Image 1 (cartoon, one colour):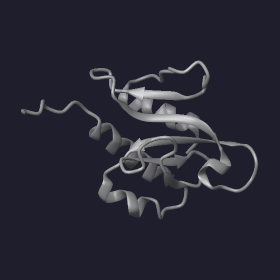
Image 2 (cartoon, one colour):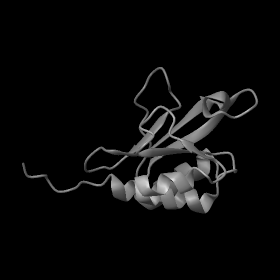
Image 3 (tube, rainbow, N blue to C red):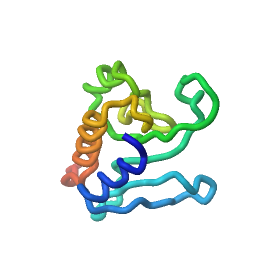
Image 4 (cartoon, rainbow, N blue to C red):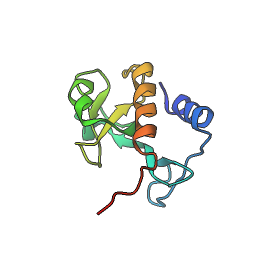
Length: 124
């Protein structure tokens, strides 16, 4: 799955457009819930070596919220890494170069969307 394919899937499935909140990272796109503004996906370009990948240059990734019980098994899959620049216990990164299975990215995207929806208030 490429970045463009992911963004089309998000637009078609969740009817949301990317938000570009950082002037110093103009290609970093945040996808949020319309009702609560919580992030469910962050797409950005990072240097390959930040993920432990060989080679020069940058690569597109998506950070997705992930169930803690699934993280270990997902990290064993090709194209998935501990979350770049976010909590590694709650988020996972997938590279958008075709090495991560598209079906798994879509599954995690759907899961991330569900996990970040508004929840009821906690009573103290």
